[in-house]
Image (cartoon, rainbow, N blue to C red; front, side, top):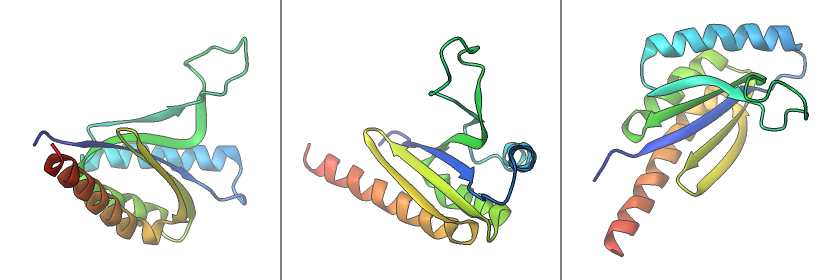
Length: 132
């Protein structure tokens, strides 16, 4: 079985913070996640709804990161992210092939969500292999 990669997009979802505060949190988290090393790719998320005439492709969503994570590292990755968000509200969007789910939670629950995601993807892969 080839290594499965899961795309995880997550954002600080705290309405009490302004854009500058969310951006500063994300900037620090991006550096920490790169040092942690579970993600194969990690970047600020492009704004796909940028206005016509904007710099297209250069616009980024404030406070949003997207990572590509090997399936065997999803639990560790989400645990690390959850530790950084702690009790802060967050949104997580996970994509595996054509399957997607969006979850609103707090950082403290992120590791549990990572475990459920990994188990769900593995179960689906096993079923796909069994069905040929």
